[in-house]
Image 1 (cartoon, one colour):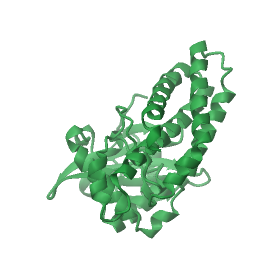
Image 2 (cartoon, one colour):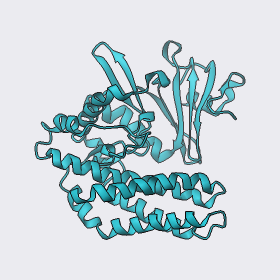
Image 3 (cartoon, rainbow, N blue to C red):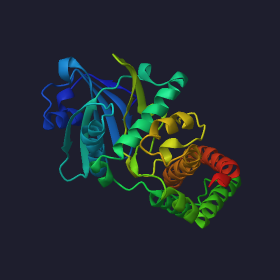
Image 4 (cartoon, rainbow, N blue to C red):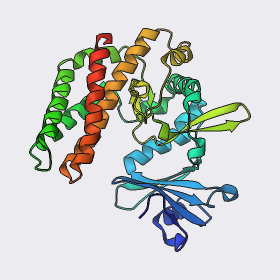
Length: 328
C-alpha cells in the first residue's frame, strides 16, 4: 500500500477504529490515514475522531513501549510543566503483547521545525531535562544509562560478525563491517572512561531519538512552542543521546551554549565543558544505537540498502573518534 494512503471505507472495522472504541472513543473516524508501518509499530491519523472533529493519532506498538509513552504524555511531562501532546486513551490488545496509544494530532509537515528554531529546541530540551529530573515517575522508566548503549554495542558487533558470510555482500562491504567491529572494540576497551564521566551527570528523562521528524512547532499566545512525540525509545539516564552533535540531516541541532544556560540554575555543577563532553558521548551513543538497529537488516535481502546506512554511520563514528575522543 502506498505510503500515507488514506482509507475511506469500512472504517469502523479497521483495527485502529476498534482500538479507539475500546479506549473509550465515541466517534468513528471519517477517514484513516496510514502515517507509517514498521515491524513493531504502526501509526494512523483518525480523521474526525477527536474533540470537535479534530484528528487523533493512533499508535500501535509493543506493550512495554506503549506504557512508556503513555506515562510520559499523561504523567511525567504534565507534572514537570512541559508542553506535551494531549493523551486521549490507551488500550491493550488481548494476547498479542501490543497496545494502542491515542494522542493529539500534532499536524503535518507545515509544523516541522527549521533552522530558525534552534534556540527554541535547545532551550526546550534543557528545560525538559532539568524539570523531569525531579519527577519521581521518570526514574521508573527503562534504563538509558551508559550500560544501555553498551548493550547496543555488544548486540551490533555480535550480529555483524554472524552475517559477514552473507553471499549478497561485496568484498568492500565486508571490509567496512570489519571497520565497524574495530570501532566497537575500541570503545569497549575504553568504556570505563565513558561510564565514569556519565556517573558525574544528573539522571533525567531522555527522549533517545531527538530528531526533527519527532518534533513540531506551533504558535501559541506565548509565541512558538515545541512539542515532541515518538517517546517509545525514551527512558531514565544521562541526557547525552539527546545532545548528540552528529550533523546528520535527520538529527536535531542543539546549541550546547543555550542548553547549558537553561540547565545552569538546576545543575550548577554542570559546566559548559561537561555539556560539550555530553554531546560527544551522545554522538557515540546515538551511533551505537543506529548501528545496532541497522545491523539486524543484514540477515535480509536488502543488504545494499543496509550497507548504505552503515557507510554513513562508520564514517560518522570515525569522525567523532578522531575529533572528539580527547574530550573524553
